[in-house]
Length: 128
Image: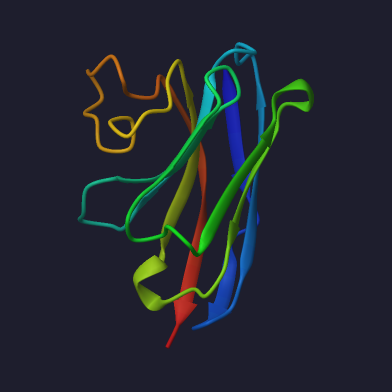
């Protein structure tokens, strides 16, 4: 399984970015998620979706500003990020796993609700 995120960059507060994820070897019934991490801090779940279960979840910090989408048939996913703030600055990763539940975004790595695979990240920097 491979996942690669791209589309990061430098943007001003209030700006927008669209992240893309290209993946291979991911089961068609798997969920796709986005996570982010700031150096020295724990990884944070941002959003996930599951076509199989028809579920979509967002963290409280991004709900209403970010939109996740995906095309499992074409092995791509994206994260549309609007109204960005400096608190959104992080390395963003896309991930794949069997579930997308409210628990998935906060589950520890050894949880059955957690994502199984994480790809390479893309840096998002929001200037004030």
